[in-house]
Structure formats: structure tokens, C-alpha cells
Image (cartoon, rainbow, N blue to C red; front, side, top):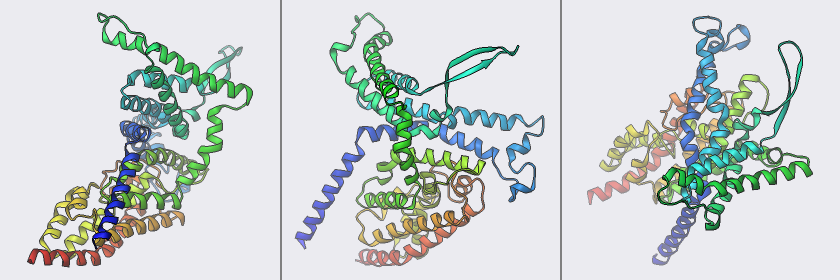
Length: 449
């Protein structure tokens, strides 16, 4: 028995060590923190789009104005509302790649103790230098041709569709900037009497110049001799397949099972994949939003917002289902009290009190339903979307949005969203109850003793 415990503890220690290394990885941390910083913009952009696209009928072809935005636009006194929403979307979600470059570069440089503002400015400059320019002929008011105007940016390199390219450029540019900034020979030191802001600016001067020259030089050489823009090459060869794979059941299954496995060993599984999921999430939501509005394209079913709405109800493990099972079937004082205390935070998808209060962590009895409940929820919600019953998740929602509301918002006020959530909650309660009773019997014996 002692030998088994030693082997198990050795496995836990090794597993925790590997997970800790992944969790502390600078680049993944920068992506995670970068997306957390721009999350308000993503949510705001989704919110105003959601308002404009509130359905006014179940049959869009039967009326002239099937969406709220179109209906409001016909009134002179109200047409400013959809116009305002459109402008807000353009300045938030519509330029998401620009914000991602700045935010990720800032956090990566900050984690490396390098001037984060200079790194962020350098990264966005390098990115805009690499984005291919478009020539456009300008016709003057009198009908004469003013010639080609150079410097027009294609929006496809600025929106969520370019997010992967933006992340790669931000990480590579900032790493180069960090290396140059750590070279004492390349840093201009000013006298102590010089104001700190001016001194930092001069210190970043040469690293900024060299970083932009290196990045743009590589891009230009590839563009001239390979006849392809590096951003287009990455998008066509790598990102397209990754984006398509991110919406599949296999990807969702892998993420969900690993997230919950990490949690069973006391490791914050959600944080492990936050950066990756946020990247895929923005792309998937933007893709689905465009597909729903235009009817052109394919749907990416799985995304972070999909998981937040239909799997992580009450937190990981379908935490609200566990809370309800504890309240309904729990007999021991500790288990019932844990369920009651976990109800309020569970409504906002926070279930650490339950995870560590029961606990779920290192609990072999509750580990089984903790894995089964979210997997069954994934199967139900994914299948419902696949057959066309559940509208695809097309809007970013705050992860703290309570169930029912999250199902409504994520699917554009479709009634099927809350229905699938109630089905998943009911199934999770049924899965948890037998194991809660077993755990309850064990705890009751302890309390009696």
C-alpha cells in the first residue's frame, strides 16, 4: 500500500511540475494576459452587434426588416442607434488584430522586464509595415484621375481573421526587441539629469530601429523573391487548417478532458489553455458572425464562448449540476453546506469553493462524474449545433454570465440556447447524484465517528 502511495505521489509531482512549466511559459502567458486586457473590447463589439441583430421574426424571408438594426434604420429619429453600434463594432471587434499586437507585445515585454510601451509601439509598427499595401486610383470630383494612391490597408489584415498572424508577429517582434534591448552596446544611456521618459525613449531608440529593419527586411525579401507576402503564406499554409480544426469535436474533446484532468490534480486547467482558446475563440466567433449574417461560409462549432455557455455552467465540471446534486441528494452536513455555499458563486460560473471545499481535487469518487458531466454536455451541445437545432455561437460572452442568459446571448437570443443548457444541467445532476451519495456515505461515517 505504501509503495502504491509513493508511485501515485511521484506521478502527481511529475504531472504538476510539467503543468507548472507550461503555465509559467512566457509566451503563452503573454497571449493569455494580452487577451484578458482586450476582453472588454471583444465583449463590447459582440454586444453592439448582438443588439443590431436581435431577430424580430423566426422567418427572415417573410418581412422586410428581420433584424432590429434594420428596423430601427428606417426611422429618422432612431437610425443613429444601429449606426452607433456599427461604429463601435468597427473600433473594437473590427480591428481586433491591431489591439492584439499591442497588448500581447506589451505583456511579453513586461514579463521580461523590458520597456513594455516601447515594445508595443515597435510591434504595431512592424506589423503595419509588413501588411501589404493596396494601390487604388482616385477619381477627383471633376472626373479626372489623380493617379494611384499608395498606402491603403486591406481590412482582412486588421480584423479577427488575421489574429493568428498578429500574434505571431507580436511574439517574434517583441523577442527580437528584447534581445536588442538587453545588449548594453545598443542602449543609449542619458545623463541622470535627463527626465526618465526621455531617457527611456533614447534607450529604446536603437533596439526599435533594428527590430523594425529586421522584421521588414525579412518580409520584403520573401515578398520580392518568393512572390508571396509572409502574412498570406502563414494564413494559407498554417492558419486555415488550424482554425478549421479548432472548431471540431476532437479539438473540443481534447481541451475539455485536459482542462478537467489538470483540475483533478489541483492545477487551474482553464488558465493552462486560456491564451490558446481566446485566440481560437475570437476567430471562430467572427467567422460564425459573418456566416450567419451573409449565409456564406462554414460554421466553427466549438469555441471558448461555446464552452462557457454550454459546458462550464457553474464553472468547470458543470459545477452548477454538482451544486444542485449536493443540495438535492447530500445527507452529510459538510456536503450539503458546501452545496449551499457554492450556489451563489456558481450562478456566475465560479466554483472554486466547491472544488476545494468538498474537495473535487484528489477525490477519486467525484473525479468520475467531474469528467463525465462536461463530456456529455459537449456531446449534447455539439450534436444539437451539428443537426441545426442549436444556432451556432456567434457572440463573445463574459464567462461570468449566468446560465440561461449566456445561452441567449451566445446564440443571438435563440430560445434553443437555454433549452440545451437546461438539458445539460439536468443530465449533469443525474450523473452526479449517485456519486454524491457514495461520497456522502463516506463523509457521514466520518462525521459519526
